[in-house]
Image 1 (cartoon, rainbow, N blue to C red):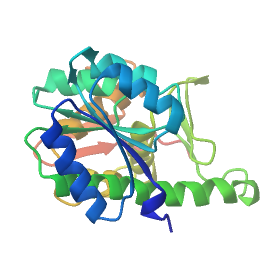
Image 2 (spheres, rainbow, N blue to C red):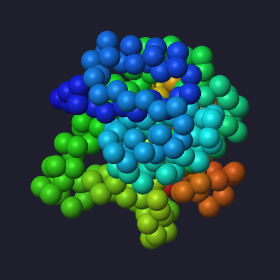
Image 3 (tube, rainbow, N blue to C red):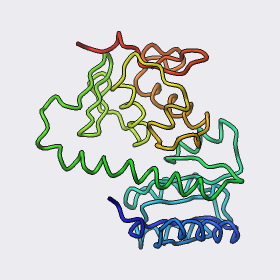
Length: 246
């Protein structure tokens, strides 16, 4: 099990009260390696030096946008990035995810929720590491899901669409993987957030909807008129079972 005291967290926000509050709560939850920055320049410099595991990133910073900074931070290690922002429109959320964010937390927020989301992400990373370590002894077809237009390889972390490798951010991959494991089954937004993000009752509709859209942009011929990942009005979403190859 991961030792929380080994997890390096970088808080990027120019409001000292928010930084202090988050540090206090995270330290109480067992996180000890806490770092902070108030500008894009400071955040980039710290990221280069410490290679944080998790980054809490404010979108509006004195010397630039956290959205643009996100892509630069991803060049150093593979941090899980949580956007912190007062912007709550679907368009803002979509921009955040499209720039490489993994999660989106709107201000004002409960710092305990932030801690819970970080801990949920860590719990997801542990089985991923175990799976990677065990991959060489798995049967060739184990963890490979074949559908009419795409193939998802769980062990390799790859998505092939019409025979071409398609880049797929981690959280989008996990959501699609969940659907692949249960084709034909309808999942509500709450169920998906619980199963994929690992936090019961703390998700928001926009997070799931944006990730559904990102999946469709990869596997559908026409994302606006999906034939594979379907919306079941009033109930949720399902991956069409008839698209699965036998």
